[in-house]
Image (cartoon, rainbow over all chains, first blue to last red; front, top):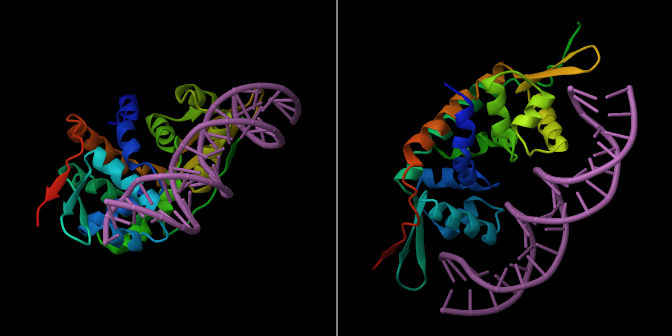
Length: 115
Length: 115
DNA sequence: CGGCATCCCTTAGGATACTG
DNA sequence: CAGTATCCTAAGGGATGCCG
């Protein structure tokens, strides 16, 4: 099932998920729609620059939407798109792995095979 | 199912998967056990330094094993551990997402909501 | 062959101040 | 409030050369 063709294929996805804060950010939006300031607080100590960078990229890739409500003070909300929600299984798989494999923090299983 | 607790929980996993080459590298090993040189060629243009860095980290985290066969010239093989194989569902989920969502390369769905 | 050791460089991301 | 504009640092990764 997993063959060489997969390797290049998932590249565009890796581009989307890349970045220190992308996954935590997406998880926050999966939990619920949030405003810029909320995200900033939740993801503390993220910098405003980084947060905007990521939000813009994810928007560009069609993973989240930015909704601006007119009025002062500004009110902007971010939430996953359909495409974005479809990423959930990936997180679920990660979550499952952590549950079952992080417990025993196995280290270096070095093998030396004698000819 | 996805709540706040997941966010911190998957952090150790993100640490493992981090790095430009980690996923392609793991995919290569899922396809089949490989030697250092093979990996280097397959992952071209990766640098030897980066490749060793990643291999060492993954070994340290218990995701892959390094098996050294004595003799000259050296012969070393890398393959996923049990923990490593367990990561497959994650890749499968990524693969599935790409299949179903990459086709239409949707871009910026900007919304302006009027009060 | 399978790596280290070095040096170098690009860039993601942090800190801070300011604006519509 | 929701960013933008600057400046700056840290570090991941590239290139190269050497060694057991």
